[in-house]
Amino acid sequence: MENTHTDSHELSTGFYVASFLILLLILAVFGDLFVFILGTIGAIVAYAAYFTSKSAAEDHH
Image 1: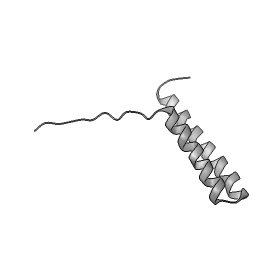
Image 2: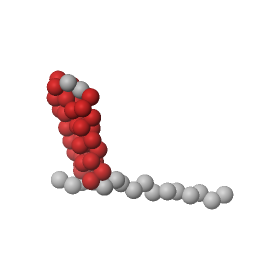
Image 3: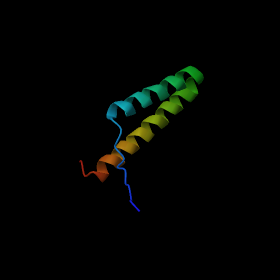
């Protein structure tokens, strides 16, 4: 039996920027000002935490 292992390739930085902007656009269109402000703060914290943990795992300081 052959064991096939597929390496997962990382998504480009442009994809993360585009997904962040699309998320902000969705918040702006469907939410009121309060939801937009809280959602923007939450999205910034989530994306910053992801990139901080990613850079720490790769030993990029």
